[in-house]
Image (cartoon, rainbow, N blue to C red; front, top):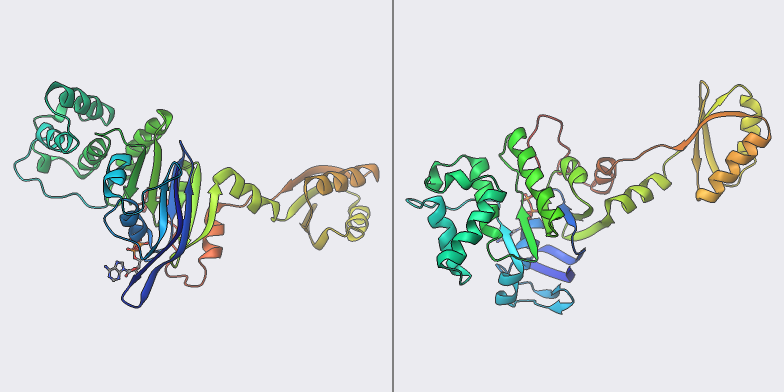
Length: 320
Ligand SMILES: Nc1ncnc2c1ncn2[C@@H]1O[C@H](COP(=O)(O)OP(=O)(O)OP(=O)(O)O)[C@@H](O)[C@H]1O
Protein backbone atom coordinates (compact mmCIF):
# COMPACT_ATOMS: atom_id res chain seq x y z
CA UNK A 1 0.00 0.00 0.00
CA UNK A 2 2.62 2.50 1.11
CA UNK A 3 6.25 1.86 0.37
CA UNK A 4 9.29 3.88 1.32
CA UNK A 5 12.45 3.19 -0.62
CA UNK A 6 15.98 4.16 0.30
CA UNK A 7 15.11 7.32 2.23
CA UNK A 8 17.98 9.60 3.30
CA UNK A 9 17.82 12.71 5.47
CA UNK A 10 20.60 14.77 7.01
CA UNK A 11 20.30 17.59 9.55
CA UNK A 12 23.56 19.46 9.16
CA UNK A 13 26.17 16.73 9.37
CA UNK A 14 23.91 14.37 11.30
CA UNK A 15 22.38 11.50 9.32
CA UNK A 16 18.85 11.05 10.71
CA UNK A 17 17.77 8.57 8.00
CA UNK A 18 20.26 6.23 6.37
CA UNK A 19 18.60 4.52 3.40
CA UNK A 20 15.37 3.60 5.19
CA UNK A 21 12.99 1.10 3.53
CA UNK A 22 9.43 0.45 4.74
CA UNK A 23 6.67 -1.67 3.26
CA UNK A 24 3.19 -1.17 4.74
CA UNK A 25 0.74 -3.79 3.44
CA UNK A 26 -2.86 -2.85 2.59
CA UNK A 27 -5.22 -3.33 5.56
CA UNK A 28 -2.39 -3.79 8.07
CA UNK A 29 -1.97 -2.24 11.48
CA UNK A 30 1.71 -1.42 11.20
CA UNK A 31 3.78 -0.67 14.28
CA UNK A 32 6.83 1.50 13.66
CA UNK A 33 9.09 1.09 16.66
CA UNK A 34 12.53 2.32 17.57
CA UNK A 35 14.50 3.85 20.41
CA UNK A 36 14.41 7.60 21.05
CA UNK A 37 16.11 9.48 18.23
CA UNK A 38 15.92 6.52 15.81
CA UNK A 39 14.25 8.64 13.12
CA UNK A 40 10.52 7.86 13.52
CA UNK A 41 9.20 11.42 13.53
CA UNK A 42 11.53 12.40 10.68
CA UNK A 43 10.13 9.50 8.64
CA UNK A 44 6.54 10.45 9.43
CA UNK A 45 7.16 14.08 8.53
CA UNK A 46 8.50 12.98 5.14
CA UNK A 47 5.60 10.54 4.64
CA UNK A 48 3.07 13.25 5.36
CA UNK A 49 4.78 15.90 3.24
CA UNK A 50 5.85 18.12 6.16
CA UNK A 51 9.55 17.62 5.43
CA UNK A 52 11.43 16.85 2.26
CA UNK A 53 13.89 13.96 2.04
CA UNK A 54 17.43 14.38 0.66
CA UNK A 55 16.77 11.35 -1.54
CA UNK A 56 14.52 8.30 -1.72
CA UNK A 57 10.96 7.58 -2.72
CA UNK A 58 7.49 7.41 -1.16
CA UNK A 59 5.13 5.21 -3.18
CA UNK A 60 1.39 4.88 -2.62
CA UNK A 61 -0.10 1.85 -4.36
CA UNK A 62 2.99 1.77 -6.57
CA UNK A 63 2.69 5.45 -7.58
CA UNK A 64 5.58 7.75 -6.72
CA UNK A 65 4.22 10.62 -4.60
CA UNK A 66 7.57 11.85 -3.26
CA UNK A 67 7.16 15.54 -2.52
CA UNK A 68 3.64 15.54 -4.03
CA UNK A 69 1.93 17.35 -1.20
CA UNK A 70 -1.57 17.18 -2.70
CA UNK A 71 -1.35 13.41 -3.27
CA UNK A 72 -0.04 12.85 0.24
CA UNK A 73 -2.70 15.10 1.78
CA UNK A 74 -5.51 13.19 0.08
CA UNK A 75 -4.13 9.72 0.79
CA UNK A 76 -2.98 10.15 4.39
CA UNK A 77 -4.73 11.14 7.61
CA UNK A 78 -2.17 12.34 10.16
CA UNK A 79 -2.49 12.37 13.94
CA UNK A 80 0.61 14.19 15.27
CA UNK A 81 2.08 13.72 18.73
CA UNK A 82 0.82 17.11 19.86
CA UNK A 83 -2.59 18.76 19.87
CA UNK A 84 -2.74 22.36 18.68
CA UNK A 85 -4.39 25.20 20.56
CA UNK A 86 -7.97 25.84 19.47
CA UNK A 87 -9.23 28.69 21.65
CA UNK A 88 -12.93 29.40 21.39
CA UNK A 89 -13.60 26.59 18.95
CA UNK A 90 -16.33 24.05 19.70
CA UNK A 91 -16.00 20.41 18.64
CA UNK A 92 -18.49 20.79 15.75
CA UNK A 93 -16.76 23.99 14.57
CA UNK A 94 -13.39 22.25 14.71
CA UNK A 95 -14.69 19.37 12.59
CA UNK A 96 -16.41 21.79 10.17
CA UNK A 97 -13.14 23.68 9.75
CA UNK A 98 -11.18 20.56 8.82
CA UNK A 99 -14.03 19.30 6.59
CA UNK A 100 -13.87 22.60 4.69
CA UNK A 101 -10.12 22.09 4.17
CA UNK A 102 -11.08 19.06 2.11
CA UNK A 103 -13.94 20.83 0.25
CA UNK A 104 -16.75 19.40 2.37
CA UNK A 105 -19.45 21.75 3.65
CA UNK A 106 -23.11 21.98 4.64
CA UNK A 107 -25.09 18.83 5.33
CA UNK A 108 -22.51 16.62 3.68
CA UNK A 109 -19.83 17.84 6.05
CA UNK A 110 -22.12 17.50 9.08
CA UNK A 111 -23.15 13.94 8.19
CA UNK A 112 -19.53 12.98 7.69
CA UNK A 113 -18.21 14.44 10.92
CA UNK A 114 -21.15 13.22 13.00
CA UNK A 115 -20.46 9.66 11.81
CA UNK A 116 -16.81 10.07 12.77
CA UNK A 117 -17.59 11.61 16.16
CA UNK A 118 -19.87 8.64 16.88
CA UNK A 119 -17.10 6.30 15.87
CA UNK A 120 -14.74 7.83 18.42
CA UNK A 121 -17.45 8.20 21.09
CA UNK A 122 -17.66 12.01 21.04
CA UNK A 123 -21.11 12.51 19.49
CA UNK A 124 -22.46 14.10 22.68
CA UNK A 125 -19.56 16.59 22.89
CA UNK A 126 -20.45 18.57 19.75
CA UNK A 127 -21.12 21.78 21.64
CA UNK A 128 -18.20 21.53 24.03
CA UNK A 129 -15.19 23.78 23.61
CA UNK A 130 -12.24 21.79 22.30
CA UNK A 131 -9.97 23.12 25.02
CA UNK A 132 -12.35 21.82 27.70
CA UNK A 133 -11.95 18.21 26.57
CA UNK A 134 -9.73 15.75 28.42
CA UNK A 135 -6.46 14.64 26.81
CA UNK A 136 -7.98 11.30 25.80
CA UNK A 137 -10.98 13.04 24.23
CA UNK A 138 -8.71 15.45 22.36
CA UNK A 139 -6.78 12.47 21.04
CA UNK A 140 -9.99 10.86 19.79
CA UNK A 141 -11.12 14.16 18.26
CA UNK A 142 -7.78 14.39 16.48
CA UNK A 143 -8.37 10.89 15.13
CA UNK A 144 -11.86 11.81 13.87
CA UNK A 145 -10.41 14.89 12.23
CA UNK A 146 -7.68 12.85 10.50
CA UNK A 147 -10.39 10.61 9.00
CA UNK A 148 -12.53 13.43 7.60
CA UNK A 149 -11.41 12.88 3.99
CA UNK A 150 -11.57 9.09 4.24
CA UNK A 151 -7.81 8.62 3.70
CA UNK A 152 -6.25 5.33 2.55
CA UNK A 153 -3.72 5.42 5.35
CA UNK A 154 -3.93 6.70 8.89
CA UNK A 155 -0.61 7.77 10.42
CA UNK A 156 -0.31 8.22 14.19
CA UNK A 157 2.83 9.54 15.87
CA UNK A 158 3.16 8.30 19.48
CA UNK A 159 -0.63 8.39 19.91
CA UNK A 160 -0.79 7.11 23.47
CA UNK A 161 1.84 9.23 25.15
CA UNK A 162 0.36 10.79 28.26
CA UNK A 163 -2.85 8.74 28.23
CA UNK A 164 -3.89 6.70 31.25
CA UNK A 165 -4.20 2.89 30.87
CA UNK A 166 -8.00 2.90 30.48
CA UNK A 167 -7.95 5.67 27.86
CA UNK A 168 -5.17 3.85 26.04
CA UNK A 169 -7.21 0.68 26.02
CA UNK A 170 -10.24 2.52 24.59
CA UNK A 171 -8.08 4.17 21.97
CA UNK A 172 -6.67 0.81 20.91
CA UNK A 173 -10.20 -0.59 20.57
CA UNK A 174 -11.07 2.27 18.21
CA UNK A 175 -7.98 1.52 16.13
CA UNK A 176 -8.91 -2.17 15.97
CA UNK A 177 -12.43 -1.21 14.76
CA UNK A 178 -10.94 1.04 12.09
CA UNK A 179 -8.73 -1.78 10.93
CA UNK A 180 -11.76 -4.09 10.79
CA UNK A 181 -13.40 -1.52 8.54
CA UNK A 182 -10.49 -1.85 6.13
CA UNK A 183 -8.27 1.12 7.05
CA UNK A 184 -4.52 0.75 6.86
CA UNK A 185 -2.98 2.16 10.04
CA UNK A 186 0.62 3.14 10.79
CA UNK A 187 1.52 3.82 14.43
CA UNK A 188 4.89 4.96 15.66
CA UNK A 189 6.07 4.39 19.19
CA UNK A 190 9.28 3.99 21.14
CA UNK A 191 7.45 1.38 23.20
CA UNK A 192 7.09 -2.09 21.80
CA UNK A 193 5.15 -4.10 24.35
CA UNK A 194 1.60 -3.02 23.61
CA UNK A 195 2.15 -2.42 19.90
CA UNK A 196 3.13 -6.03 19.48
CA UNK A 197 -0.28 -7.24 20.68
CA UNK A 198 -2.17 -4.64 18.61
CA UNK A 199 -0.31 -4.72 15.30
CA UNK A 200 -0.33 -7.20 12.45
CA UNK A 201 3.01 -5.98 11.09
CA UNK A 202 6.01 -4.33 12.61
CA UNK A 203 9.08 -2.40 11.54
CA UNK A 204 11.97 -1.78 13.92
CA UNK A 205 14.06 1.28 13.08
CA UNK A 206 17.41 2.03 14.63
CA UNK A 207 19.85 4.82 13.73
CA UNK A 208 17.76 5.76 10.67
CA UNK A 209 17.64 2.26 9.20
CA UNK A 210 15.10 -0.54 9.19
CA UNK A 211 16.63 -3.36 11.16
CA UNK A 212 13.72 -5.77 11.14
CA UNK A 213 10.35 -5.73 9.38
CA UNK A 214 7.49 -8.02 8.42
CA UNK A 215 4.34 -9.60 9.79
CA UNK A 216 4.46 -10.26 13.53
CA UNK A 217 3.53 -13.89 12.98
CA UNK A 218 6.36 -14.39 10.50
CA UNK A 219 8.92 -12.59 12.69
CA UNK A 220 7.95 -14.60 15.76
CA UNK A 221 8.15 -17.76 13.70
CA UNK A 222 11.68 -16.78 12.66
CA UNK A 223 12.64 -15.91 16.24
CA UNK A 224 11.23 -19.15 17.57
CA UNK A 225 12.95 -21.24 14.91
CA UNK A 226 16.30 -20.27 16.42
CA UNK A 227 15.24 -20.75 20.05
CA UNK A 228 16.30 -23.82 22.04
CA UNK A 229 14.34 -27.02 21.73
CA UNK A 230 12.99 -28.25 25.05
CA UNK A 231 12.61 -32.02 25.34
CA UNK A 232 10.88 -33.27 28.48
CA UNK A 233 11.32 -36.98 29.09
CA UNK A 234 10.36 -39.58 31.66
CA UNK A 235 13.36 -41.77 32.61
CA UNK A 236 15.78 -43.12 29.97
CA UNK A 237 17.84 -39.93 30.13
CA UNK A 238 21.12 -41.59 29.13
CA UNK A 239 19.54 -43.18 26.07
CA UNK A 240 18.07 -39.84 25.04
CA UNK A 241 21.43 -38.09 25.48
CA UNK A 242 23.22 -40.71 23.38
CA UNK A 243 20.75 -40.10 20.54
CA UNK A 244 21.04 -36.33 20.86
CA UNK A 245 24.86 -36.38 20.84
CA UNK A 246 24.80 -38.32 17.56
CA UNK A 247 22.70 -35.65 15.79
CA UNK A 248 24.50 -33.18 13.48
CA UNK A 249 21.76 -30.57 14.11
CA UNK A 250 22.43 -30.55 17.86
CA UNK A 251 24.89 -27.83 18.89
CA UNK A 252 24.73 -27.87 22.69
CA UNK A 253 22.85 -29.87 25.32
CA UNK A 254 21.90 -28.80 28.85
CA UNK A 255 20.07 -31.03 31.29
CA UNK A 256 17.83 -29.83 34.11
CA UNK A 257 15.95 -32.56 36.01
CA UNK A 258 13.91 -34.35 33.36
CA UNK A 259 14.12 -31.51 30.82
CA UNK A 260 16.79 -31.42 28.13
CA UNK A 261 17.49 -28.07 26.51
CA UNK A 262 19.06 -28.35 23.10
CA UNK A 263 20.39 -25.74 20.71
CA UNK A 264 19.11 -27.31 17.54
CA UNK A 265 19.93 -25.93 14.09
CA UNK A 266 17.34 -27.66 11.98
CA UNK A 267 13.95 -27.18 10.37
CA UNK A 268 10.59 -28.66 11.30
CA UNK A 269 11.35 -31.87 9.45
CA UNK A 270 14.63 -32.31 11.36
CA UNK A 271 12.72 -31.79 14.59
CA UNK A 272 10.13 -34.40 13.61
CA UNK A 273 12.86 -36.91 12.72
CA UNK A 274 14.59 -36.39 16.04
CA UNK A 275 11.33 -36.93 17.90
CA UNK A 276 10.71 -40.10 15.92
CA UNK A 277 14.19 -41.43 16.76
CA UNK A 278 13.65 -40.81 20.45
CA UNK A 279 10.29 -42.54 20.42
CA UNK A 280 11.63 -45.45 18.35
CA UNK A 281 14.35 -45.91 20.99
CA UNK A 282 11.61 -46.22 23.65
CA UNK A 283 12.41 -42.87 25.27
CA UNK A 284 9.18 -41.63 26.88
CA UNK A 285 8.85 -38.07 25.52
CA UNK A 286 6.43 -35.97 27.55
CA UNK A 287 7.10 -32.65 25.83
CA UNK A 288 8.92 -31.53 22.70
CA UNK A 289 8.76 -27.85 21.77
CA UNK A 290 10.71 -24.74 20.82
CA UNK A 291 11.05 -22.23 23.64
CA UNK A 292 8.84 -19.25 22.74
CA UNK A 293 10.64 -15.99 22.03
CA UNK A 294 9.16 -12.54 22.26
CA UNK A 295 9.44 -9.41 20.19
CA UNK A 296 10.60 -7.55 23.27
CA UNK A 297 13.63 -9.84 23.64
CA UNK A 298 14.39 -9.39 19.97
CA UNK A 299 14.03 -5.61 20.16
CA UNK A 300 16.43 -5.51 23.10
CA UNK A 301 18.92 -7.68 21.23
CA UNK A 302 18.94 -5.66 18.02
CA UNK A 303 19.10 -2.26 19.70
CA UNK A 304 21.65 -3.47 22.22
CA UNK A 305 24.40 -1.05 21.10
CA UNK A 306 23.00 1.51 23.53
CA UNK A 307 21.02 -0.04 26.34
CA UNK A 308 19.81 3.29 27.68
CA UNK A 309 17.94 4.03 24.49
CA UNK A 310 16.07 0.75 24.25
CA UNK A 311 12.71 0.91 25.91
CA UNK A 312 10.62 -1.80 27.44
CA UNK A 313 7.65 -0.75 29.51
CA UNK A 314 6.26 -2.58 32.44
CA UNK A 315 2.59 -2.83 33.21
CA UNK A 316 2.02 0.50 34.89
CA UNK A 317 4.13 2.64 32.66
CA UNK A 318 2.64 4.69 29.84
CA UNK A 319 2.80 3.54 26.25
CA UNK A 320 0.41 2.39 23.56
N1 LIG B 1 15.20 19.70 12.82
C1 LIG B 1 16.21 18.98 13.27
N2 LIG B 1 17.46 19.49 13.35
C2 LIG B 1 18.50 18.76 13.78
N3 LIG B 1 18.40 17.47 14.18
C3 LIG B 1 17.18 16.90 14.12
C4 LIG B 1 16.02 17.62 13.67
N4 LIG B 1 14.95 16.77 13.72
C5 LIG B 1 15.43 15.60 14.19
N5 LIG B 1 16.75 15.69 14.42
C6 LIG B 1 17.61 14.59 14.92
O1 LIG B 1 17.39 13.45 14.12
C7 LIG B 1 17.33 12.27 14.91
C8 LIG B 1 16.01 11.56 14.69
O2 LIG B 1 14.99 12.36 15.29
P1 LIG B 1 13.46 11.89 15.32
O3 LIG B 1 12.68 12.97 15.99
O4 LIG B 1 13.05 11.50 13.95
O5 LIG B 1 13.56 10.58 16.24
P2 LIG B 1 12.39 9.73 16.90
O6 LIG B 1 12.69 8.31 16.57
O7 LIG B 1 11.06 10.26 16.50
O8 LIG B 1 12.65 9.95 18.43
P3 LIG B 1 11.61 10.04 19.68
O9 LIG B 1 11.12 8.63 19.94
O10 LIG B 1 12.48 10.52 20.78
O11 LIG B 1 10.53 10.98 19.30
C9 LIG B 1 17.54 12.72 16.35
O12 LIG B 1 18.91 12.52 16.68
C10 LIG B 1 17.21 14.19 16.33
O13 LIG B 1 17.96 14.89 17.29
